[in-house]
Length: 162
Image 1 (spheres, rainbow, N blue to C red):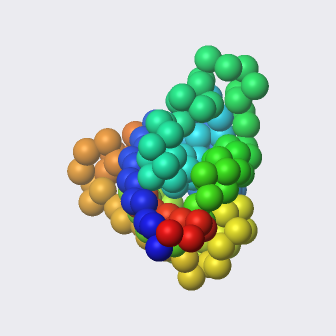
Image 2: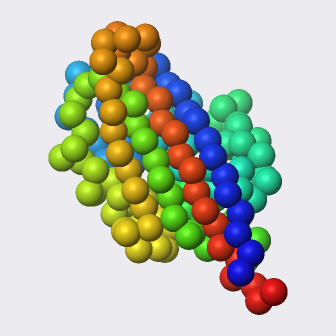
């Protein structure tokens, strides 16, 4: 079986005027992420890790922030589009391992629905999607609650016979 690995990092600023959406889940928080789309930093990192594994470039190449079609778009729609690109290349998800770096809020209660949303979107099992969260321990832009960051690594498996 043929495998491909991709990794990505995404970062967005926090602002009181925006809702917080992570993994397609709206989270009760005083600040949300700033971006051209809904700024779902977790979905962006996961999508970009898949694009990277396929050597197809980054999110900006496929969904430029200069295109009004993507203004305010739900990032899960972007991930669906990336899924179709992956299928067109004859790959499927082996597994995804992602981490959200956020000082607040506590994300543990939201992890399961985030995993399920991602798994559903990528037509894979929830046990193929790992999402973790960690804090900045009051250090740096994450610790000061100025922004959030997410990392993702994915393993893709070829659907073609070798």
